[in-house]
Image (tube, rainbow, N blue to C red):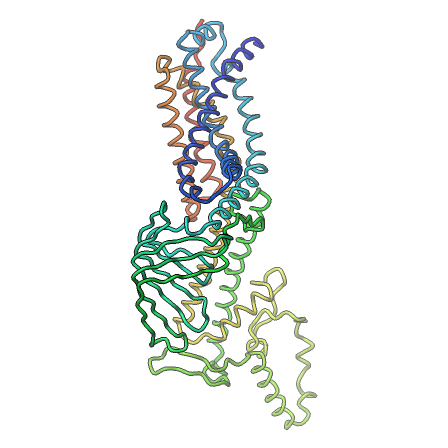
Length: 517
């Protein structure tokens, strides 16, 4: 058995290494073709360009290692069955599952190593790559302009909208420039043609514009503007950096985090959803209490309220504090009570009979003032104190049914946003283990297929590999989309492809494991 194990592993080593190198090079060339346009004309050093592609390799390896496993298994088992080696093994009383056992053990080890790799190395490489690409994109913004797009050249101040760009000559046609550097006026510059260039220091950007107009609008007089035609105009945009700057403190995306960081972000989404549900509940209770408060309707509360003829609130000049208002009413009641002699001696001590509310009031101030609603236990409170205050503050602005509908819709949207945030990060957490586990699935699925079609050759390897890869990754992407829409849980969204393909592999293996005697 040891001889067979060594033989199986030795037969797979070469094809696996070749498949890893081949698929990695192919995907790396695809990345080169996609990023070539962003790198050309940037005056970058060769070391920087090489760094871009080095940081791209970990992301590619995370995808190509499972591919290489399937390619190697299909190729080796197809050759072994074609040479009647699998038939001889079965004739010796050894089932196909025993032949696959060493590969399954290696696949488990590879899956564990990939999981560690995806959680430690891959987030860091993705972050460094994103920081580097962002710095390259800002190095020479003129070469990063996109046609028929508003491009931000100077953040929040200067925007350029080119119609057509001749990158070899650094010329733009049908260009529009929006200049907001002067706080008192806004300038819109339109030109049929313009040449771009940097100063010798590489910090200032120049536009040599031809045949255009300048429209100046004063911010204090938005309905009046000046229009100036020109045949040639030199526009200088200072302090446009042309050096390669790396913002290492940039915010990380979900694919630039490890599992611990993503769990923290998912917990924030859960807190957002819980806060929205709690505020919605407290808001509903506060509105209900206010609607049932017939002794003092909201319309009679002090403070002028502006209402249009159509019945829709257009503005509130002052919204009174409900606690202060109820405190004033209690003072009025106390003043009236002073005129009744011996009232306290005839009335039992009702304050002593009430439970101790402490500082937390679970009911609305109006209801508590009348003694109609008591406190709730700490474990049954609808929301924390801060959440309760926010919801009750929103309830004080309630006037019509449309106000309540809009507020409830806002709570629902916040809850959905929180739930989507949870699913977004948990999808990436599960993905760090799902793709490595595909190595095991591809061994179970590839070996029976190769044994069933021994004369397939290279066509079998290429065709079956592309078909399985395509179906598997489409399933992953589809599951991710369904999880983002909250239709299924992230767990099933990411692990369902492995379960389906693994089950198919086990069925195929059961049909192929026939011992010949």
